[in-house]
Length: 149
Length: 429
Image (cartoon, rainbow over all chains, first blue to last red; front, side, top):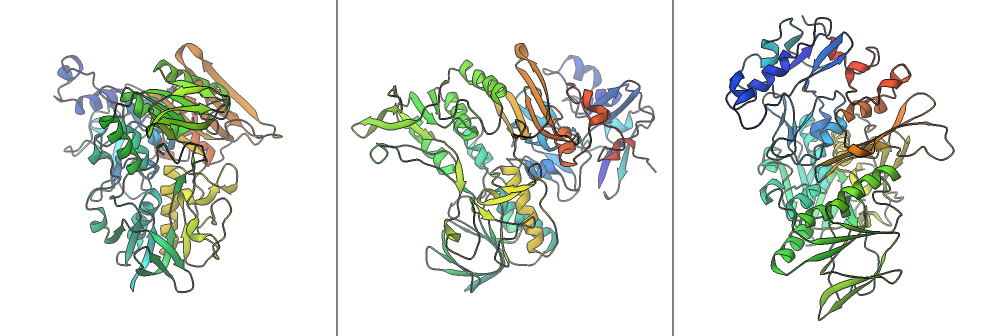
């Protein structure tokens, strides 16, 4: 199972992961268009936490036992049976934030641009390497494929 | 007699949780699920969203249409279990069919508590917990000229019903016996903020009141009479005081009951091979370190999962749940878990942040061992789960006590040795 992990020793909080996550999840996937020309502002599914010189990016780590999936009141949060990834169906989400209540990593964000729904890392479907990993200048984000302990 | 290895009574959060784990560890054992409701598994908490027109009927379903087929489950829907024969490991349905089991899960849920109110026999009222309730209310609003409703009960169900009805343009009055709304879930200050959110939408509240009579004319509801004599005209009455465990099947049987079905951490009842989970059971609460009713969707699902594992022979304990609620009213988010006030007689620290102009309110309750044992988040809920994780881990928060109230509090503020998840430090090969 794939997931993105962070290495705080080399993260410099440049937030390029957020920028490229926004681009990848925009309509055009073009950086200028995404930020300037699309109707709604782009939104990242990763956020960088900072405290003094310490920083790291937090995004869904695709838990093997995902509390967000088990707690979701609608079935919007689900495990893709083929990939084992934790996925989110925005059509089924009603923005009750139960997933935010139970995600001990704090990795689920609120997307209130059109309707109120949860937003999380989807590992960039269609890309071999997720955008945040591909654009991290310091390899502070890496894609790993392994079983969780 | 049909015979199943796993027989599940209840087709909601708990039953589905059990099915999903059983299939994870036992690919072939036969499973059947029985429900007296005819519907494919659906999400009860969505009925207010459906009523308000926020979601379509086809989004009400908790799992995809091919769920039973894919999981190789026999759905026995629209049939009611009338008796359980514990001596012969079988259940009897209302059509007299008997169904045998090796392992039985009671995931029968709750039923709305309806007090006796005069006028009830003559004039219609609704409860608000099932698909049928939502369909009936929606139909009534669309066909009849419903301009106003009185909701008895200012808890989560009553308030969600109010939100749904408000979207339909119905004038609402909520009648609540306690001195404030959401009293089991929020403290005084937080419930005052939520009440304001509803009042801004035109919803009226009558706290410390109850309905003593439903009034009507020519078979139609015209209003309610409150206990202290006030008369509130309305076209519809909804009773939403709360739910109580549906345990009629195990009354006067060897299955031990208290307020709900008694289970251990393995979700086993007092009868071998019989398990229970969800709103019908008294389940473990990791904050109270005790067993009690916590009739909540996530707790029911995870309790069902744990029951499923144990039914299939995988030893697991349910230590995951406490009283915990996350809800959004009109775009205004609220989350709480554990204690909302320090329990009487216990010396605990209370941290509060209140920004009235932004309607932000946050509260943490910390015990003598420096464990967080209660949390309330109003209108600033992001990463609330980080705190719930610390509660569940019984983490000593002393070294970062000053930071937990920060708006951006997250994993970064937690010392590495306490982070449950070292992912942020993970050494990558």
